[in-house]
Image (tube, rainbow, N blue to C red; front, side, top):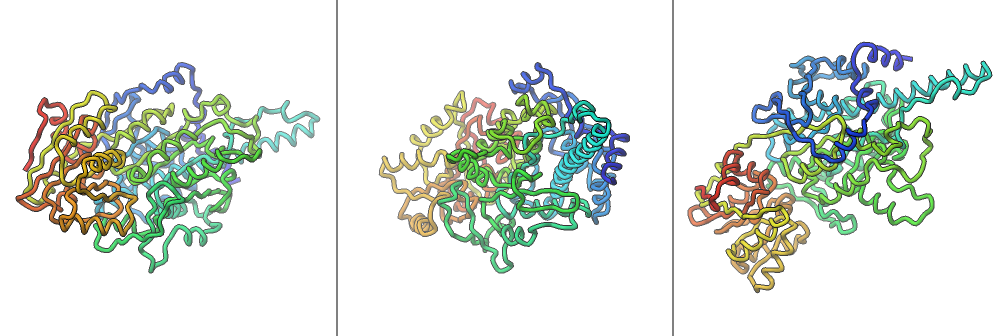
Length: 588
């Protein structure tokens, strides 16, 4: 067979990282080290094409950047199609050295936290640049899926030949050859987590575009997929579901008219955040909407999986198999992670908690062919996790450190930020007040104590702080209104009118509300950032609501706001403000 010949050539010519990763024997000491999770990022190396960024790794060596895909032991038919595609190649088989380096990291099966994803406030050039990184991980996913399928197919044929030979010799197959350990508990090997159907549509389009031509002769249910995940030409405004609760989603439209370009780019599509779909690869076709247990790839939103998990946990049926389809995931890609962060981050933790568990039932899998590390409960040490985001966050670092325990190691980007203070065009006084607290558990209380003593006119708070602030203002009989992600359209209009006409002195405004609506509150004279926004460009965007020359902007921060402070104040200023004994810093 052609595929068998292709595999033989790859095996003889180049080291196969796929085989090396999955056949690695984990010593007990290594397992204990991974479980402890204390490996430090001790190695730094330059991020190709990204002068203000450096990679940090918890392994001692930096990867070799390979220009030739064939030398990466990528499937020959994938390499051939990749080279045939109409795209400029400036670095061997790659568009750039940065794309080659990123693919090398993927191909080494390292966990990756990539915080250079362009999204909000991105330019056409940066979008094109980032697409090269998306292409790299899609190619890696395809390579893993096809290698897995080809390996199982070859071994099936080999076992069949041996069975035939043993029958002719009057022997049992088991006496002739040992069954190869080439499978997990269930078939799905790749999980793609995305925030909206529109982002899932982009991923599947790229998956089909990069798949070998022989694989795309027949795309089953393609029309249905484009109908359910796309939008009609005359239906640009679609519902944004961001409350993390399927049953409470409002049938409201997103008005993209008059909004910033980044807002239009993200929301001008199908913004349903509840979906899950299986994708199966056969010899000459790709089947969309395949049953999860016969799928190779699962594309889903966190909410889509959460409802499936909830259904499984509440089911009383004897044949309930839960979410066993997550038991053998070997590659997890979470893209648009910054957008997912604006939804319900607890859903992400729940999904990670259900990955790589030993399943409740056997799913037509030959137990003699299940890999030893699956049977021993070590699957998560062989799972590669790729996290792509516009920004860094303590939340993402926590996931990387606690939930990514891959034996191949992990890397993350270290970024030198210029800050956005200079982008505040109006001449206003910007005061950064440091909140002193020794532990992150004290941060919320210290911030709240500061506010209750100082007061303020307009607050920009995270949704976790919101109930506490609202309760305090009610107890004080304060004149205030509120806009957050769950506020109805009618109440939003009423609050904006009250605030503009001075019928309410204080407005509580959450970052998630701004993310989903980008409201403008002109005429504001005092602005308090109770907590720093995740998106740096929100700072000058909201500050633009102030009156020039008569206004002030107050920012509350602590040492635990390092990532947000770096993006807004710049890396150097942020370090100075956090380490300084001073408690107040003023910028004009």
